[in-house]
View (spheres, helix red, strand yellow):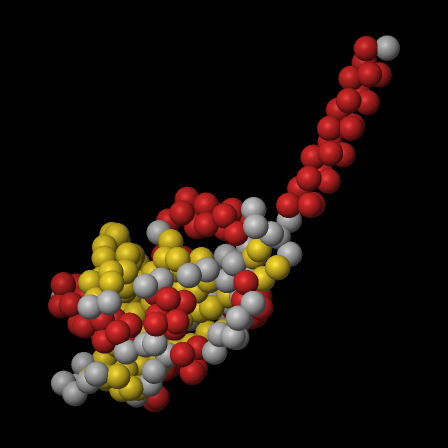
Length: 224
């Protein structure tokens, strides 16, 4: 008799748990609440002393094969910029309208080794701009004689998140409201054997591109 009652209680609890989980499952995408994200329009092609150099896109490292990209990301923007000194920065932005557990962004620490690069260093840092600071990750990637300093950040909703724990907490914060957040990965890199020099050039580029954006775009792209 006791075992029968226990089994009934367990079955009821399992039913209640599954019902609560279903009820708490987010269904509303915040990407659908406001103007649609169009990276081609949001990201300026010319600002400060930087302008797009269209023929250089092929040098940019792609995160994964196209089939995988289409499953994870809603939009991908890849551009190369050149300044009046002839210095170049490669920009890659991957945007996902659904940043649930099943469709999380792929980070450079994964996509660069997948393309044959070796990651020789990585650290957390901060890019200082005139309109606010952005927490970033820096890493150095090497493939043959190509040395590529990389700076990137990721967002969930309108907030920059650093590491898996922050990402998960931000996803949960939206989930408790019944909402599915969007998010993006914003990455810049350059070909430079001197990491300090490379990061300094990238910081100049990031400061200029962020400050050139209208406030609403800046919030969505960099959380500031």
